[in-house]
Structures are given as C-alpha cells and as structure tokens.
Amino acid sequence: MEPETEIETEVETEIEEAAPVRESARGMAELVAIVEALIFVADEPITTKLLAEVLNEDRDAVDAAVTELQKEYEGRESGLQIREIAGGWQLATRTELHEDVRKFLKTRPSAKLSLASLETLAVIAYKQPVTVPEILEIRGVQSASAIKTLLEKRLIVTKGHKETVGRPMQYGTSKEFLIQFGLKDLTELPSIEDFEDLAG
Amino acid sequence: MKLKLGEFAGPLDLLLFLIRQEQANIFDIPIAKITDEYVKYIRLMKSLDIAVAADFLVMAATLIEIKSKMLLPRDPSEQEEEAMDDPRKELVDRLLEYEKFKAAAGMLHEKTTVEQAVFQRGKIESDDSNAEINASVFDIITVFQKILLRHRDEIKMEIAREEISLSDMIKTLKRRIFEETELNILAFFEEMHSKRELVTAFIAVLEIVRTESVKLIQKKTFGEIILKAVTNGTGN
Image (cartoon, rainbow over all chains, first blue to last red; front, side, top):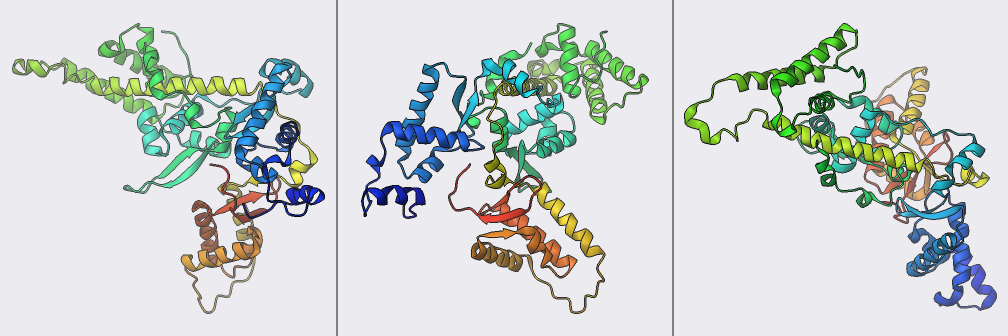
C-alpha cells in the first residue's frame, strides 16, 4: 500500500493535492480500457495482483473489469479472447480461427513431444514433486532423455532434493508448462483417477 | 503378429498392446500366451538390429518368472489364500497404474494440440527491451563455462590459499544483491580470484535462487543474466 506508483500520483495531482481516495479515481469503462491495454502489452499472462498494483486499484475492481472485458469480446464475437492462463490474463486469438491465422503467419504446429516425453511429463504433473526412481517405477522404463528434453523446454523444473537415501533430485512442472498447455493452474488437470475406467 | 516398431514408450506399453491384441482381460492375463508373444517381439526387434532397452529385458524376465510360478502345483491346504497369492497381481497393479498415466499423457497431447490453435500477439519492441525472461540453471551453467574457459588460460599462482566458505559466499552475494538491487552474475563471477572461489560462487548462486528470495532474469534471450531480489512475490 505504501509505495505510490508514478501513474497514480501523476493522475491525482492534476485533480487535487492529497489523494488518499483510490476507489473512484476511474470509472468502470475507463478501468476496462486500461486493463485491456495492459493485458495487450504484457508479453506473458498478467496477474490480477500485478494489474491491481500497477493501477493502484482493488483486486476486486480489476477482476470485475476483466470479466466485463471478457463479456465484451464474447458479446461481439470478437476474433480475440481474454483467457486465464497460468494464474494470469492473456489476450489471444480464438481457437476456431487457427487455420487463417496460421496461413498468415506461415507457421505449422511446432514439433510435438515424443510419447516418452509426454508420459514422463504426465507422471511429473500428477506426482510432483517426484524423483527419477519414482518415475521409473510407474513407467517401467528409464526416463533420463525425456527429463532432459523437458528441462530444456522449461516445462519442468527441479524442486530440491528428497531427503531419502541418495538424496535424489525432485521434479515438478513449471509456469511454462501451464502456459503451453493452456491451464489456469494445476487443479484444472482432470483427476488421475478419472483415467481409471479406460482399462480395457 | 502385427509389427509396430518403435511405437512403444516402454515395456508396460508393449505389454498392454499385446493384452489388447489378444483381447484378454487385464485382471486375468493369459500369462503363458502373453509371455510368448512378448519374447517373440523382443527377438524380432533384436533380429532387426533394433537396440532393445534393458528395461524390456527386465520385463521379459518378470513375465517368465510369473509364468513359472503359475505352473507350480499349489499346496491344497492353502486353497483359501489362492486368490490373494496370484503371482500376476503385482504386474496387474503396475499395468493399471501405468495405464492411467498413459491416458493422462494422451490428454496432455490433446491440450497442446488445442493450445497450438491459439495465438498471442506478435513481438513488439518493448518485449525485448523491458521484458524479463526467467533464466534457468542451464543459462547459468553456460555463463559459468565461459568464465572457466577464460580462467584456464590465465597463469595460475595460488600462493596463500584463502578459502571462502559457501555460507560466507552466500552472505556476500545476498548483501550485494540487496545493495545493488540488480547484480550481473557474469560480473560477479569475474570478481573471483581462483577456480575454487568461482565454484563456490556458482554454488552460492544456485543456492540463493533455490531459496527463492532472489530471481534470475535475462533481459533478452542469450543476454546477460541478472540476479534480482524478489520484491512483489508474484508468480507461484
């Protein structure tokens, strides 16, 4: 609360000297516009917390503005959408438009992860923090090269040593994982037990 | 027998495939038949000069062991416990557990595919000048190697061995980060006088980042790596 941001003081001094009030500094429409601008310029998902800090607004007000913005985009069937990813907000194109967007960007879907890497990632995502021997136990096969690939792609991070014999390194998923897999947070993953009835 | 080379993520994956191909019940695996199929498959891989991972051979041994256990005549007095003592039980449990993660991997695959249909805005100028990229341990190692290489060419004359302990190094590093708010790790490494100190400094950097009071950032890809105190506790 104490560090006044420059934006705040600039705006306020024009109106009045002392500025302890923060709620009615901006109208809703104005806040929606500013939030939209910041989500646009942020190069990775921007959190409500950060938006609130920069704008010196309540988090609730920021959340309300984001919700309003989302409604606006949906209401006019915009080509863009405001998505909640990795705990933050992100402006992105709508899924349905991918063919034309891709045609323009001249890109192809990027290299896919191998079956082994995906399996290893799944074990890490659900069992984190997890060690290499624990991954081997589930997959029944060495996963060293898959772990290397996942580390290089920054999808997983080390999570310190496990305090058992040999102090093996533990792994967990990263923020990049949430971003690349379009997840708000880890709780958005379906429960591992939901995959049980797939046994045939 | 249909041949699907290199499509199996591991021995459990191959085993599941064979069980399905036989349309067998996973809770009542015809172990003799499946073992034969499995071994046949491994032989085929070998004959085609495909490197068979040791893990596949371990599974073959496990299957043969189960098969032989099942051939042993049962002690009639222990009939009650028969169901509990099924030698296949452990394998079935592993298969069921593995199958869940295999399905989860499929789910992740679908998620990336969908995610690849969503695009963010193209890069703008400010992304490179302002945006902070989180640097990883790999980035520090690259920096470290650069300096080690440079140090190697210098003439070494270590006279008095002045050893600085890791905890002292961490203290120094912490003080520097908080005094200077941003500390270029390349510059910090350069200040070290010996390889020993350099290694201590490197471990100190790793340690300080791990304790999370400090963030490693890179102002642009392959740019200089900077240590910065975490002030606003963002992220997760």
